[in-house]
Image 1 (spheres, rainbow, N blue to C red):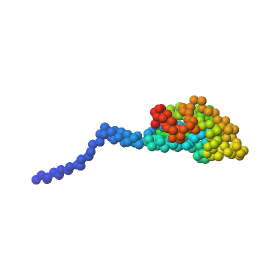
Image 2: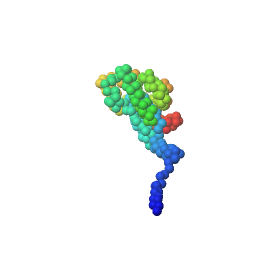
Image 3: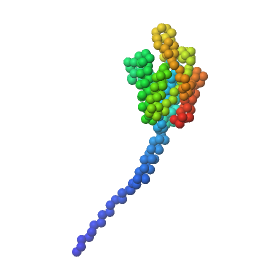
Image 4: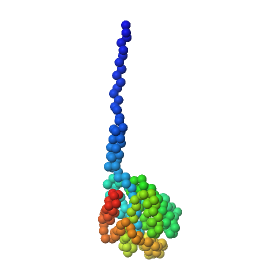
Length: 214
C-alpha cells in the first residue's frame, strides 16, 4: 500500500524587482531633497566692525533654513576662540585666520551646506586666496561687501571698540588705525545704513536665487 504523499505549501514571498528597488530609492531621495536643499555655497560678508555683517548673516540664515537649506554661520569671535586661539592681529595673523575660516567654509559648502561668514577679512589678497580655494574645488563663493561708512559704524559701536580706540585703550582697529582694503568688485555691495536688516538679507537672498543657489 502506497503511503500518502504530504504536500507542503511554501509561504508567498513578495518579489522585489530591480525597477521597484530603484523606484523606492528615488522616492526616498526625493523626499529628503524636499526637506533639505543640498546645494552648498559660501557667502562671505566683509566690512568694518559694527557694519552689520553678523546681524545680516543671522537674518539670512533664518530665511535659508526656512527654505530647507542646511546653514552654518561661522562667527568671527567664535573662530578666534576655538580655531584661531593664540593668533594676534598682525597682518600675518589676520591672513592666517582668514585662511582657516576659508578652509572650514569651503569644506562645509562642498558638502551641501550654506556657509555664511560675517568676518572682516581686511586684506584683498587674503580674500582672493579664499575665493581661489573655492574655485579650485568647484565650490560656489559669493563676496558681499557690507559697505557701512566708518562714521556710522562708530556710532553703532556694538562691541565698544571705537570708544576704546578713541580713549587710547585699543590700537589696530580696522578702518581707523589699521587698514581695510575695500573689495573692488564684490558680488554685491550693501549700504546697510540705508535699509533694514531684513532688506539687506533679502538682497543677498535674491543674489543667491539669481545664481541658482537658493
